[in-house]
Every structure is written in C-alpha cells, then in structure tokens.
Image (cartoon, rainbow, N blue to C red; front, side, top):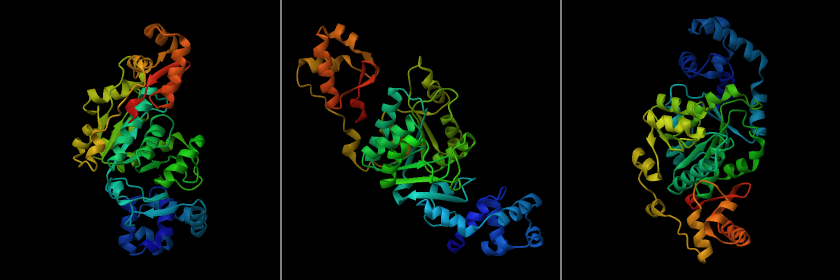
Length: 366
C-alpha cells in the first residue's frame, strides 16, 4: 500500500471520497492504482455513489499525480497516508482522520504522549506567560506540545516547549509550503529542528478561515488532551475543545480574571466541566502519565534579590502589569533608581516590560 502513495494523494483530492469510501474501494479493487484508473462502469459496480464517481472522473483528468508528488518534494515535505506505519497512532483512531498528511520535519514515537495547547491570538501577558509556563514544564517531562503556530497562545506554547528542551508539532490551516502567519517563520524553523509541521491541505493552499475548524480536529486528534489557556466566549479555540470531547480527549482550562473578556471562554469551560489547571501535576495526574523527570516537576525558580531595592520591587511586582510611577510611589525610591533596577531585573529574566512603562513578574515562566 505504501507504493500506492501517489494514488492516496489523488483520492485525497477528490471531493466526497474520504477514509471510509477509500477503504471500500481498496477492498473491492485490492489496489488503489486499479481503483484510480477504473472505468465509470466498474466504479459504479463497486458501489460508489454517482456524485463521488463524477468527482473522481473529473479530478483524475485534471491531475498529474507525478507532478503533484514533485510539488511535495520541492516543498521539502513528505506524504504520510493512513496505511503508513508512521502515521500518528492517536490521530488514526479518530472517525474523520485525514486520508493523507503533509509533513515537514520529523515525527517521533514519543509524540504519542502529547498535549495540545490552544487559546486566543490576542493573548494578554498572563495568557502568553501561562502558555509558555505549562508548555515548558510539560516538555521537560517528555510531553510533546501541539498547537497551531498562530500568534498569541500558540506561539508562546511552541516557544515554551522548545525552551524546555522538548518536542513540539505545529498544525497548519494552509499548505505545508506556507507559514502562516508569515512573521512566525523563525519559530517555524526552530520547530522543524525539534519536531514537525503538519497539514492535511494540498501544497499551495492559502490560509482560509474555513480551513481552521478542520485544522483544529487534527490539533486535538494528535493529543491525549487539550489545554485551553486563554480564550474569550466566542474564540475559535473553543472549537478545538468541542472536537476534543467528540474524540474522547480530556479538556483542561486555565482560570482567568473574571473581569477580563479574554478569559470568558476558559472560565465558562471550567463551569461546564473542564478540568481546572493550576499546575502541570493537574494535567499529568489526570492523564495518568508517569513523571519522566521527578525533579523537573518540583522545580520553582528561586528569586534571590541582590539588594534591598531589588527585594522591594520584586515584592511589588506580580502577574498583572504595574506602571513605573506606581512602583515609584509604593516603594518610596527615586524614579531613576527604580528604572535602573527594573532594567537589571529584566536582564536577570525576573521582570519584563509589557506595555508603556508597565512591568510584571515573570518567574512563573520557569
């Protein structure tokens, strides 16, 4: 069946011929090449409905399968089919598994232990930090992180997994030859060195909002569960939780500020029964995954101030941004000293500017 790869590709491009009909044709003809070249009469005799037959006749007149395979190779990708032993095992089990996957980079056996992290593209600093934090700690435990390469939560999750020394997979809603959004090219390059980029859409397919619900079912289908970090009530990320539930996957959610609309969707998920998550242990225990690195599960960053000024500012900083003027008023120090100390804390990775002259604590990243 592996030798029939180009015919798997051909059938994947025929409307109304999905895995079930393809399996039926394979059983009837015993070979996808014979099914692809079969006459209209033989296709009808094989039990294929009229519309799929017409679709197949039309598509195979228009396609040069060898040329299509060459496009994939030129894009630096390879094609995986449902018949391939390296097709992701978890994804293969969902009812509407993609007939083929376009893959750049490398899939690995350990990717069967995966968690998807999704959320809004317009993430707050809290959302980005939470996504990074969970992804980094889970990756350090050997959990592959899956997301969609979008801005916001997705990007933070991929970066956290990479910084945690782990693997991450990005699932696209466009062709494998296109990185969307384009300014995530550097992140995509890093992912290819420590994971893979995946799509079910043909080479050359542009980004389209109608593709993302289908993309989302792959994001959830590749994983044991889905963690929603930050999402408003009508976020597209919530579509992933719907497909996750249909696929029998666990759904987790990070609680957020009740006054921030960006957390409306995640808080509602918790009300509806999603597992509230405050630490990676909540996820690992629910999924019954043995800690691969017991030390990594208990590491918290020790903040050791170098002087009383650093200590004072670190006590005032928190997860929510605070303006320099407020810090100056609360600590009673000259603004010049506050500014210089904040710069030092930024260099140490303990604080960061998240808006115009606003700072927050970032030790939760580790």
